[in-house]
Amino acid sequence: MSQFNYDLAFSRNQGITTGEQQTRLKNATFAIAGMGGVGGDYLITLARVGVGNFKISDFDEFEMGNFNRQYGATMSTVGHDKMAVMQKLALDINPEATITTYGTGIHENNVDDFLTGVDVFVDAVEFFEIGVHRLILNACRTRGIPAVLGVPMGFGVGVLVFTPEGMSFDDYFDIDYQAPLGLQALKMALAAAPAGFHLKYIQPDAFDLDSRKAPSIASGCKLATGIVITKAILALLHPHELKPIPHYICYDARINRLKNGYLWNGNRNPLQRLKFFIARKKLGI
Image (cartoon, rainbow, N blue to C red):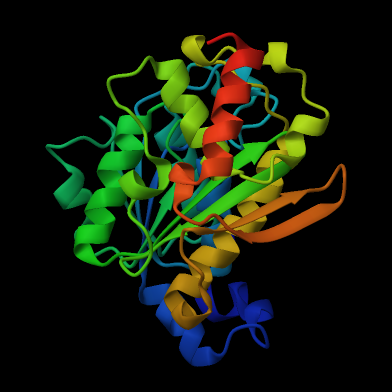
């Protein structure tokens, strides 16, 4: 069996990263909440970049319904803890990495511990767990931790960067937390991917927001990984290059469209309010 050698394992990063930057990646701590649709892929990609320390969370097990998109979902992992499976895979790439696990998910009782010592947070929380997104991203803002959120939409993705200099989660999404879950999810989806490229081909009846159901496909999740992890690396190595919300990125590979946009006033933007009204009518919620 070969002996692990960090410098050799990640030597092909050189030229894209410098030796000093690779050392920073090795010493950095990235937190990822969620090991499912995109979170597992985020972990593996960051492990291959050479990140040396992780904090990860999940409380779910793999099931067959995950096969179309989740990195760790295979016949041999059905019924197995997602976090344990992904931890093992990441350590098989970099046995020297430290991975701290949170098997009850992230909540008010452990969010402080989860974010202690973290350099960058990558949000892979289940989309419909809006309160958890809010909890962690607001906590990151308080602590000055940059965060990246990617939401796969069909064959594309919407990507948002959160920093203390940008808008807050609450100001950007403008969600009424007393409203039904479907309306909260609609608000979040409209601001996560304001360009709406996916709406040109996804059938409206594929969404059942109140039942927490939305279509997904592996290639859209892979696009999310590529863009989100690039932004997460930039947050550590080149933070001046980041454009936080209300800036956004939308890319769709099916229609080959890219938009680097600026959503003035977030969901309070008059055009967003109109989109919300029309979408409610179409979805019947």
